[in-house]
Length: 375
Image 1 (cartoon, helix red, strand yellow):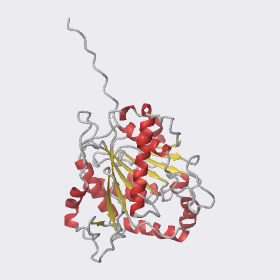
Image 2 (cartoon, one colour):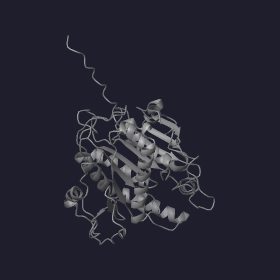
Image 3 (cartoon, helix red, strand yellow):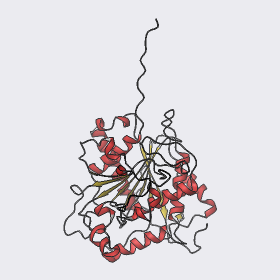
Image 4 (cartoon, one colour):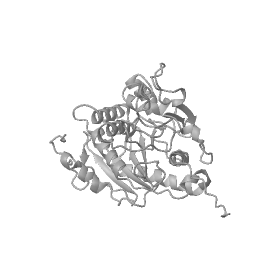
């Protein structure tokens, strides 16, 4: 597959240098990968080579975060947003280490920020424009985002290091978490499905109770989307491959798919309702059809609240195929904001949720061996 031949206008680079724990990947309006230096499309036959040079996970990293931003986010703002989220995670972990006993031996995330042209007027028409662009980037003849991001995820899955050697919990080691906001969640759901079907290499299962189907060994440890801009019923059709089926759990996500929602999110509430005749996941949570699909257990769709930063998440509150997290008490905004709480997720409670997913992705520590004296 080759990118369209027309010349792409490169992104403007952020003026400040990137933090050491962040690397960026840029997509054009068709979802094709742009070269970080020239802004030109990377040739299809050089895609894997480019990813290998750009995305070598550092040896110090224990976790890899792939972050895809949402609407109204420029290139520099995407980096700032990802850095802000990671900073909140470190602040939360440092202040409340007792909540994350499995992370005491080390938690050093390395973040890949996927940037795409998401800016438009702050209006209903602007929101719909970017919604259509995100859809076009992910589908159709010229929608390359799932292919490019899927290859990116497949590469990271194959190359990650091995901090858990001996636990038999991961194929290669470093934990892989996907984090999206708004339309970024659409890209991730499309990409992880493509990666599993086309680019996966055989591997093991992870620390959650959910196991993956043998034909789809590619796995990530968790997928979290803040205020996803997709219809509530998207997992009945568009993303149906990410739910259990008649042959068992075929999802390439080895852990839960987590979606926050807030009734104060106007972008995925009122605006989404006008455009798609159904509210969005970011406003009301995801919903499956009233007739449970074959292979779906009663507790595969779970609902909980966003917990305060000092309150631990029990494993059983997150260990499900789908988890809706009602964040209405925290994700709020003024009445004057036309999109409401759509981007109001930069809180310690959000960092706590991500850290809890990283915590529960780890296997239980091995029991200490008792040393009995020789008779």
